[in-house]
Length: 435
Ligand code: NDP
Image (tube, rainbow, N blue to C red; front, side, top):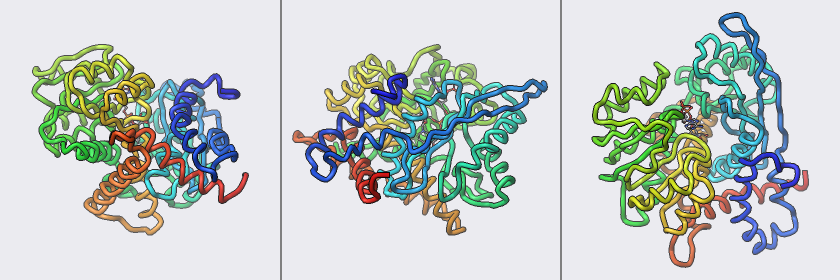
């Protein structure tokens, strides 16, 4: 643990990778004795900076901004920005570390990074969010660029924030480039990017189910979160004929026994994206639903679970409840939502379990496609991007099977994703020497 002993989330993420990658390194002469993992866990650069801004009442606030440039062996740093009061170096380092493996899995040339701030957008006016984003970018702009580091959204950073950030970057640099992804369609964004993480997670689940002759059609699905990833995961489940029965936010979860259909989901999207309300308001609108304050939805019987809110939201008890109620497939839309004891329970019970770095990679993959479109100065159709996304999710699934299939035929997707992601980055690092 050494110099990272005070960073629990980072250590958790590294431990999960080390458990599967260290035995692989030991069996492969080319990686042996090169301290390759030791080099991978140290960020190439860790930036921290002051973000001062003025609220609507004229009061001055100070937040801390970060950018972790983790690994650029296979391409420019790429990874989202998170605005949430819990943001600290440990959380961003865990996310940046995961991002390196995830980006490698996408087959696209992207290194790994992550950033953000402990700024809380909740309850802030649009003007306050704009002033914060502008101030944040006045510092970040000197560290990023279309060939250096290309940030995107994450928790608390959606289309509105990306717009403000892009505007300030463009003003300072006096150039219109693909320096951020998740942009609006009329100014360089890619079709399907808002949908990509949620859609990709469901495509991945569909690939896993196929290995057992199953599909999403007719299945009951429990989803946590109600932000970007959760909303589009729900939309794709509905399109594929599944029934979504829960959504949540940090206050609790709603359970709609009749299912959250297209019309109800549209209402949720308006609630969350435009009115910025709480999921508890759902029960005032739809009497078929109940609200469970302070709880996570894993106690609700289902066939498939898609954790799409945040890290460590699914503990061992949650996993046991899912397994007891007959859940056969868990695909992570969020980053590291399952705690180690939950993952252990899924593996022990031969549940189809996909770690976020594999199943939620569709978001960054489509960001990669946005970068390509920006460089070419063209815009692909919705169908074209969706087809590429589907193909990438299938390729990631194949890579997981290649490296994760065990003797009894069960696929350990955690092992598969970690090793497949590792190999490409490690090979590039070896080729580039000790730097
Ligand atoms: P959003 O900000 O759009 O939504 C986040 C959702 O999670 C909200 O419903 C939020 O509820 C809930 N949430 C956040 N923190 C907590 C918490 N501590 N406890 C319980 N619920 C919480 O973010 P995204 O949908 O973009 O991100 C969700 C997850 O997916 C994150 O782990 C992110 O890293 C991951 N991810 C996102 C990608 C993307 O393209 N957006 C790509 C790959 C991964 P509330 O409103 O109450 O805070």
